[in-house]
Length: 244
Image 1 (cartoon, rainbow, N blue to C red):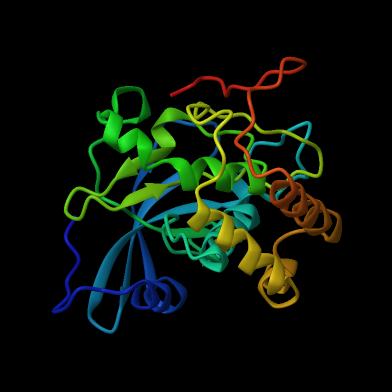
Image 2: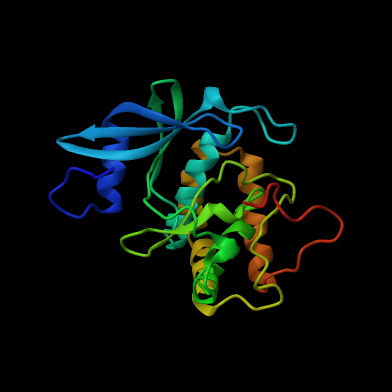
């Protein structure tokens, strides 16, 4: 689905369109347990594809507070921006055809090229995603949740509704770097986040509970104190199901 535009859009351009544009339903993604829709968003002559996840379509979970997944999607996007890693598509929270929900930039990619058949060089590019998942406590990093944009080969990661739990819930397929120290550039990003935490993490208060933000800060301190990718825990399930 091509965007009608005369220039290459920046992330800020996308954010403006997603926040202010008129939403039209195009279809429904049938995979997954929550209702997810492909939509177009039109604003000032710009027509862009997006992914809409209404709160009303979220299936209740025993371990996550009800009707919070859309907010977690936005919190993950804001955290990635605060770190300067920018691999999560632009995501906002707004009203849509079925009520309040997350609205995320749609990325064109090859769904047949995913984590389980990535070339070694592309696997190496996943270090920031693996570290982000440690910090955000991602409970559902499947192999299809990381991919590369068709045109630019930019790395993206999606589906962050199951992040930020106060308990350790990390479940991911990306354990490739276990035992390795964090790359220096990523470590510096964590340090900058800690130095600016009062400002950067304040933006998350609209989307996460005080306890979840406190747990995030504690994970940040732990990662800085022990800057090594961990091995999968043995006392609980460490991989998502299904893995793809």
